Image (cartoon, rainbow, N blue to C red; front, side, top):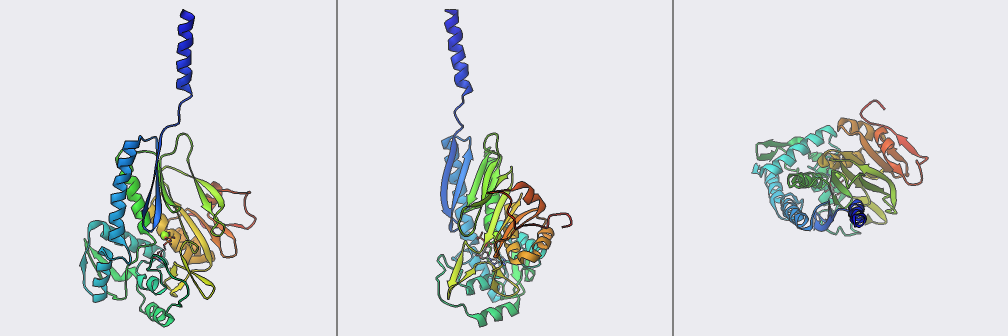
Length: 348
Ligand code: ADP
Ligand code: MG
């Protein structure tokens, strides 16, 4: 009898030992023109559903308020700028403009959301940029000559004005990062400690799933296969800018949606630029800036923006990485022969 009781007890302990994996709540939202996948680790379905519903409300509002060409708050602001009038904005849009001014300054204007009119002239102010039509190069040259820049934009409290009416704000290169920063902050406030919010490959993570880190793939821009994987640590954001995600094909040539503000031309020397940072907004803006900077100048711009983890693939297929990134990333099939290590916070 005693023996049986012991056996039963042992069975219970054993059952307790082979734990079931904690529940994972996964939902996909369509917002910011992309699918946003939210994965919450060790969260029960009700808590998970409530948290994602809250994120959806936040994302929908930011989409409406910060969209570069759909009617909304930002297009109202852009019209006021074109008329030469100041405009009152909500505090969070004022914040987005302020951090964008900082990133523009740090990147020497390679990231500059004041180039909305250039993006529009290239046909990217559309959900489906149609192939074929050549942009109006005279209009592009004329616009570059007026040099719209975040330096022209002044934010006093929540009052925004521009001394240059050619400025049109387009936060396509930074808004997603700031939105995802807010999303993970919201999750944390709800007591959710381990999560990943992934907007089409641009993502923020908090915590970790169990005793390992979130594993993130860095994809080949052409084949979409994983080039490398990297463990994203608690609080990190991984953002990639590339000329493969959105482009137009004109007379057989692909034009990227990332424009060099100095020339008005789409970038063509960098195929993809990935940045890891503890701020999604910084990672997003920096990935765009490094794509514009190109294979020679990116280490300098990365340093100016305080970026220690970056990986770029150029049009020749050469892989460039900072020392810290090269040390952390795990390449599929081993370290590529054409890996160039440069940049980083220290001297290169
Ligand atoms: P993705 O949208 O693929 O994540 P980015 O973060 O680089 O890529 O954002 C590209 C978008 O940013 C463009 O679609 C355009 O709206 C805007 N943009 C293009 N060139 C620049 C630039 N030099 N500086 C700031 N924003 C830009
Ligand atoms: Mg970006």
